[in-house]
Length: 199
Length: 148
Image 1 (tube, helix red, strand yellow):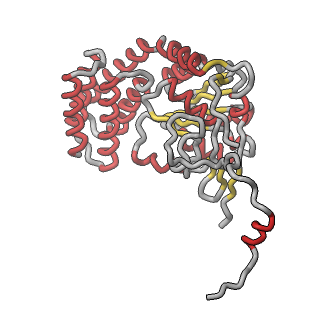
Image 2 (cartoon, rainbow over the protein chains, first blue to last red; image 1 turned 90 degrees about the horizontal axis):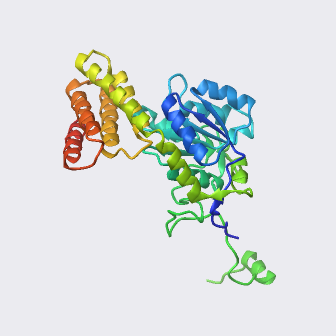
Image 3 (tube, rainbow over the protein chains, first blue to last red; image 1 turned 120 degrees about the vertical axis):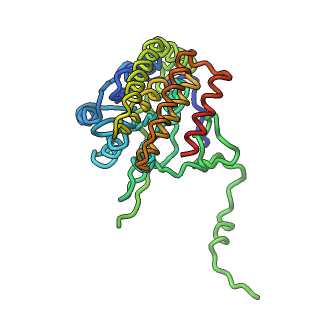
């Protein structure tokens, strides 16, 4: 059965959201946006090492972290979360926020395992849409030697079903409801039965 | 080499989003935009202060200041990027781009940076409005960035 479209109503009241940015002004603005989204439990911190210790002691449902920070940046934090922490903590959704991505960081952004990268200029509408996408995320989680995180091969999947922005050719992992009657068992057997072919 | 393992995860966030008692998406967007708007004046003042620091650096033009210029430009992008600042954001982004490239290429040229700082000041003084002046300024910055 196809996934129902995202409801008009969403509930973030019980979500614990960790906001990480070394720029206090940006952190305050981000916090105001999440107040507007109805998030009551916000944990704000000014560095990734601080965020690491918070993750180790508290339950967090969503992380928003700035990409470029001194010491440990958002990419390294995400990489740590995906590779160094036990499940289910390592599956925590992470949204990376970036203004300008320097050339040296482009590969880090691709490989760190973030759920989404949101580029500025940023609007509350775009941010909420990405959170809704996380709620309806169809992607598998991948664990291998070189990468841990959501499946990056999303080009042909497009946004989750029921969301704006899907193209007609976008694929879905949902099989959907049957449109024809079930095959007869003898027909199925015939599909698998080796038969002599006369040429 | 170990094989890749793929599996489905249902996050706690996904479950919470659909819990009863939620609010309309449009209301949440409206409320968040209103909350964010309360920071606008303060944020633009911060952008102005950062630009003043950048101008002072441009006046001194010291050696090895590339990373500092990039950090200041990046800070403007980060703060201005929460609002519709049109040409200001674009000019600051262009400064990030050119300073990043010059750092990578180890070929620093202060005049390119100084032109960006002047354009940023003009745009900020003009209230970040889009118009002929800002279009001409941005076209000039683009030609500098593309020529690098």
